[in-house]
Length: 385
Ligand SMILES: [Zn+2]
Image 1 (spheres, rainbow, N blue to C red):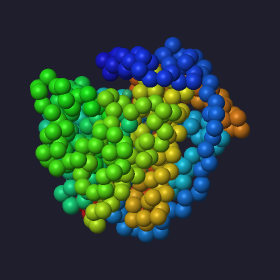
Image 2: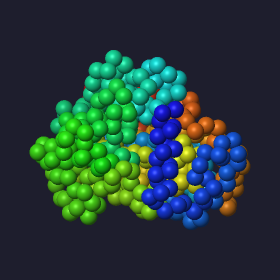
Image 3: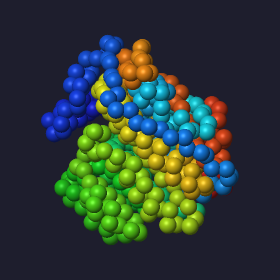
Image 4: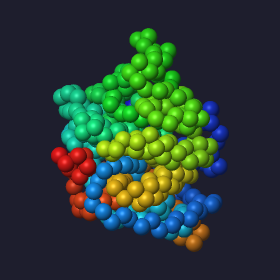
């Protein structure tokens, strides 16, 4: 509930500081159990992307749609007139999302299981149920000499990036979580949340500490774009990145920039990319923004699949940590790109979520498995562990 109140507060804040979306009627949670209609104004083309033939997994791109279930994907597919880049996936599996102490998980425990290979308690980030720090895919890849990174559209104290980079038994300890980033082994970080890096209660300047540990800290997209090599930690926004319609293809660009820097390592790289705000818009029961965010994530998936297809040794895995909003598609029209949806909750729901894979060894992600198995499969395929 605390998280939900925070989301509502964030919604109010967002409504004060950011332009309103086209359909204001959906920017509240009064839509619960009522029918909401969305028509996608301009569908995008989706080409066929041929999967590479080899079996060597040099690089892994793990993509997490926060709160994205099959219903979100099918709604987005319908709205885009029956096309998604995700359709190019070679295989699909199902991930069981329950956490160590609750059936319906959150992004802390759900993402920690994906990042570390171990289920943990609700609200934990990067620690086990006893609060002990866990190694994540970032640490495992670094131990083998690979380069690593994360690119998200949310504030960096939010659970999913923290699951991979930080350690805390309470995801609401936001300053503490940001204060943990200088210990993180990621070579590339892109996200929001600059307001908690300086002017902190403990007096620390986290940007300065990052500089001292060898990261460049660009504070705008242009500054990041100019960087050609080395470690980069880019936080261009005080809290989250702007709404999907305002920020354009920022997630795609930030992901490709990460690849440009990380792929200079001949041993390979691990990159986590998150479509962060599907979860927020699911909590708000805002179908308009939820579809915009899902389509933005899908276009980013397309860019990663296209890069992987050219590279030939890159495995892309797309999944979610849990479902948000209890979304149900009750009607729609493929020709018109119209969907009619209902939300059943302002929180998360309990359901298996899809796991899509593209590239070498994609077939390893077929079947029904635990969310924690995703980490284990990646370690086996990429790191030989
Ligand atoms: Zn959530």
